[in-house]
Amino acid sequence: MFLGLDIGTSAIKAVLVDGDQNVVATAETPLAISRPHPGFSEQNPEDWWQATLGSIDRLKVDHPAALSAVRGIGLSGQMHGAVLLDTAGEVLRPAILWNDGRASAECRELEERFPALHAVAGNLAFPGFTAPKLLWVRKHEPEIFARTAKVLLPKAYVGYRLTGEMVEEMSDASGTLWLDVGARDWSDAALEATYLTRAHMPRLVEGSAAAGRIHADLAARWGMASPPVLAGGAGDNAAGAVGLGAIHAGNAFVSLGTSGVLWATTDRYAPNPQSSVHAFCHAIPATWHQMGVILSAASALGWWSGAAKATPADLLAPLGERPAAPSTATFLPYLSGERTPHNDTAIRGAFIGLDHDTSREVLTQAVLEGVAFAFRDCLDALSAAGTRLEEADVIGGGSRSRFWIAVLASVLGLPLNRIEDGERGGAFGAARLARMAATGESPAAICLPPRRLETILPDPELQHAYAERHALYRALYPALKGVTS
Image (cartoon, rainbow, N blue to C red):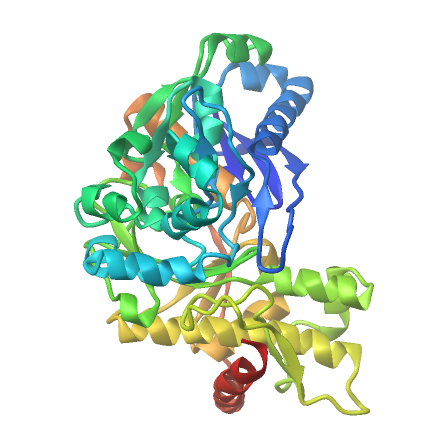
């Protein structure tokens, strides 16, 4: 038996997986986000830990025999968050999250201090990444920076609480801007540019390798026969890829989670930072990936659900299974700024083209299409980086909506696959990494693809109509930037 934990932004999810890769049980504990100032996004690391304990404790109550048989634990985690610890391992301030935009000026400072950043780290300096956050702390909270002895990412902090070991793996470390992504090692020059050294960093392992064993008292708390191995784990998207079996060059998926990701697995380090595409290590050895990332995907529908005072299911029900034509309104989903292709934390969202006949259904469809257009921007950026996709799987909470997948297929011009258990995502991938760490089995033997339920093809007529709407969408960004930035 193997346990996967997803240290997410909105919840901690735990999944028990048996030796036949069947999901035996799940548990979830919600989390809240603090936004103390406009553009800020923070969480208390202690909340992650308490939610982790709560989720596993519920598995202990409901499935004690299965939990007692756990041999390995794997972690998936929200990326880029900065957890600052003192010499005693105590948290110094709330963690600054992936969707926090405060460090724009520090991105420019980092690129000036380390001109080779793009070549080494494979990415532009985005405010959501970890390294600029440390420059911000140094500038605005110098007493905290001076006391910082270690910098951990969110899942590494939970791993530290589980084992007492400070360990990170390659996929999550790629999103810090401190990793030499091609060499799969910390870059001393990148660290020096943020006034840090290797001593501030955790030990590096591959995601499928053992990172330690959990504390004996925790194993006893959960009735485990012996303390399980903890795997290196993965950043949330890499964990999702492991769960999907997207470990071979050419594999691709669309993630409709809180944020959105268009993923392509590669067998080599292939950076093209000027296209705002991310080039990261995969969570398994000798493998990399490219990603286009949008900051608001399913969370855009969540926002609209709150504004419209209706559940997402109630909003989606009147739309049916396929669009007949594009919405007459256009939505720009820049609720938290945007990453690919604009790298713009100041831009904000908008509805365009409203009139007296604009209904709730029209606006709901516009929200779904706006997110799809943002994914089209990602696809174009991947194409500019030399990556061509033939098809993609769809995962994440948004994958429940067949209508949304149909919109995406026609906007992207790609066959999209609905898959079995498309929402299990990162926690399931983490359980697979736990198994590899505990047993030594190979990724090819364990990371099998899920069963495809159906393939939704682009509608040729809608493709043409959506191409015109996407051109309008692209033209609106510079106009919007002029009034919101």
